Structures are given as C-alpha cells and as structure tokens.
Image (tube, rainbow, N blue to C red; front, side):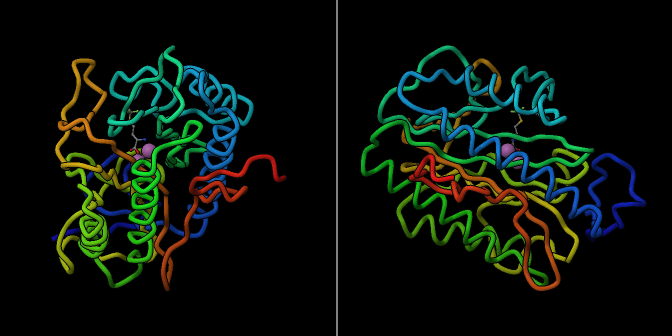
Length: 278
Ligand code: MF3
Ligand code: CO
Ligand code: CO
C-alpha cells in the first residue's frame, strides 16, 4: 500500500510516498539540525522572568540571518513569526507576543531552520525561574516520551511501534497524549509523509526503513488529551486548561537504529539547563 521512493528522484512535494534519503541528505540534515540546536541553546540563555516571547522570535530571526538560514514557519500557511512559543496550557503553535514570561511558567520554543534546502525541526521546554513540582514532572515525562519514541525508531519497527511506546509510557504516568498533532516526515520538505502519531498499536502504520527522515514531537498533558484552537487560528490549548509540554527532534533511520540531527551541542536537551559551562 505505502510506497517508498528514492528521495533524489522524487518530486519536491508531499505525494504521500515515503522518501528514502542517502548520505548526502544526512549530511545536510546534520548541518540544519545543528543550527537549530545551537539556536535553542541560545534561547536557554535568554529565558528568564520578564523575557517577552517576541524577543525569542527576534533572536531566532537574527541568528538565522547571521547563519544563512530561513525559518520555515515564516509565511507558512499565513503564519507570520519565526518561532512558535507555547506557554503553560498552550499545547503548540503559540504566537510570540510582547507579554513577559512569569516566574513558574513553562514555555516550548519550536524552531525550524532551512539551511541549504534542509529542514532542521526541533523544540524544547524551558522553565522560567523556579517551577512547580507538577510542571517539573510533566517536563520529565514529556522528554522521556520523546526518547522512548526515538528508541523505538529502527528498521523493522513500524510507526505504530513508536506511537504505542510513547502512549503506554505517558499514560502509565497518568498523562494525556495529544492526538490532534503529530510528527512528520521532514528533510527537503517541512511536513512530509509519513505522519508519526504519538499513540497507536504495535505493528501498525508503516515499516521504518534506513534513509527515512522524520520528527517525533509528543505533546503531553497533565490532564485530558483534548485540545481546541483559539480564534487566532493557530494557538492550540488544552480544553481542561491543564499544563501541556512538548519536545521535538528530527531523526534519520540508519541500518541499526537512528541518528538524532538536533541534539544540543551544549547538552541542553532537557531541563534543567545549567548555563555558562562552555
Ligand atoms: N514546527 C512545527 C512542527 O513541529 C510546525 C509549526 S507550523 C507554524 O511541525 F506555522 F505553526 F509555525
Ligand atoms: Co515538527
Ligand atoms: Co517543530
């Protein structure tokens, strides 16, 4: 049913076929992914009580400009910012603005740089000052959900194995797994086949093969999984207003597992971020 196609001979649009990329693509993804990761490292230094999410957006614009990269979100389906900044009960696609962050907030910053045609898509959670224990626990569970999904990402497994592993773990921690948004093929397109659901059934979905490049980006709620989108057409929030968190990496399937393109060079993959040790 599902068709795999050699990326170099495929049209540059989402046809539903799954691209299999070669070594050159992995090299391109390493560079794009590392640029995104370095930017997210910079964000860690920026975030404190009083920082405006617009300042984060400005930083991502400037860092991209300095490094010859364009943020993929700008003008994407009418979106007008360089990042998404999603605070507390905002699940994803929060729009940067001039409201200052407050002590105790948790904020996701999601960045996708396009470098030499390759899309490096990643997001992390940032605590603002001291956060509550429940929030800390949610960040732990969400980061672990991402890494459990990455552990399941190897040839022979299916996309359903990734989703099932994440869902079983997150629900065992009494958290809700958001169904309305998913990971996606990435590489030379922003959002490509296949969809990577963060819930599901082992053995279902599509088989993972070396050369596939996609994101995993679980959104995990302290409460129920249900979300609604606000009237701005973008901001997705939890219906029960419970806290929500998300981490995202771009990865490539290798012969015996996967490679993470968006790892932090400073080790700032998960909070707490111990700043200034470079
Ligand atoms: N970066 C998001 C993702 O992980 C997509 C954001 S699209 C936007 O797929 F338009 F909301 F920015
Ligand atoms: Co993504
Ligand atoms: Co993203």
